[in-house]
Image (cartoon, rainbow, N blue to C red; front, side, top):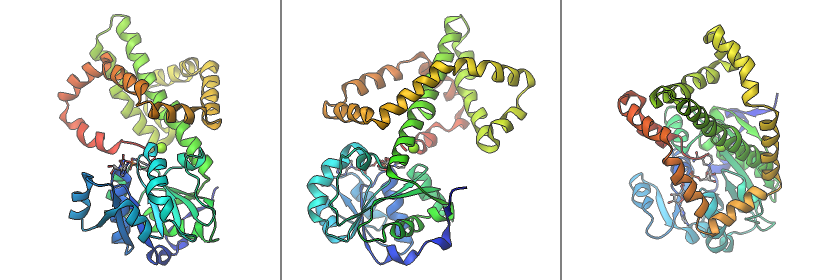
Length: 340
Ligand code: NAD
Ligand code: MG
C-alpha cells in the first residue's frame, strides 16, 4: 500500500506562518481561500480588475487584491485560474513578484508537466490537488470532513516544499480524508487519461452509441434514454459503493452473464489499443500541444463539437424526461460535476 498522510502527519503551523495568495475565486479558489482562512491562515484572494467574483469574496470576509500586488505581498501563491489562462497570468503578473524562498502551488500539474510555466530555480513548486470539485472541498470542510488529495513537489528549493504542501493540505481539510504522494507527471497524465478514455470521453461516447443503436433499430427514444443513460447512475453508484463484484451481486444472473460475455466484445482489443494510443498522445505532449493551439486559435473545434454534442437527440429526450423527475436534481449536480 502507498503511504497516506492524515491529520497528525502534517505540521499545521507551517502554512499559518506564511502569507498565502489564492489566485482565482472559482470552483477551487473559493474553497481553498475560505477553508484556509477558517484554519487560521493569512489569506488574500487575487483577482483581475472588474472580476465578478470580487463582491462574493469580499462578502465572505476575505481580503481581495490585484494579482501583482497579492503576488508581491504573499510568499505562497496558489494558482487556481483555468489551466488555459495560467501561463499568461503567471508571466505577466506573478513571476516578476516572486522571490527566492517563495512557493508556487498548483491544483493540477498541466502547466508544469508540459513546460508552459517554468518557475525560477529558487522557488518551491508544489501541488495540492483535491480529487473532487471545489464545492465539495468547501462543503465537506464545513461538515468537519475533507476531500482526499494528492501532493507533489516538482522543485524543492527550500528542502521543505513537501512539508509545506502537506501543511496546506491540512489547512483545506484534505488530511482528514487522506493525502497521497504523487508526481506532477503522474497526476497530469492519469487525470487527462481518465477524463478522456473513461470518465468523460469514454462514458459519453458509450452512452450515445448505445442510445443511437436502439433508436436506429426502431425502439422509442424514451426507452433508449432510460436504458443507456438514466440507469448508468444506478449501476455506477453500486460500483462506487461495492466495487464491480458488488455491483454484479445486485444485478440479475441474466444481466451478469450478458455483462461478462458481451462487455469484452464492446471494449475489445481494438478499443484497448486506442486507449494506449490516447495515453501515448498525452505522454508525448501531442494532446497538450493540440489543446494549447486550439485555445490560441479561439477554440473553433471545441466550440463546434460542443454545439454538436448539445444537439444530439439523447439531449432533447433526456431534458423532457428529467423535467418530469424533479427529484433528479439537475441544478445541484451541474454545479458539483464541473472540472477536475
Ligand atoms: P474555475 O474556472 O472554476 O475558476 C477560475 C477562476 O479564475 C474564476 O474565478 C475566474 O473568474 C478566474 N479567472 C479566469 N481567467 C482569469 C484571468 N485571466 N485573470 C484572473 N482571474 C481569472 O477554475 P477551477 O475549476 O477552480 O480550476 C482551477 C484549478 O484547479 C485548475 O488548475 C484545475 O485543473 C484545478 N482543479 C479543478 C478541479 C475542479 O473540480 N474544478 C478539481 C481539481 C483541480
Ligand atoms: Mg480529474
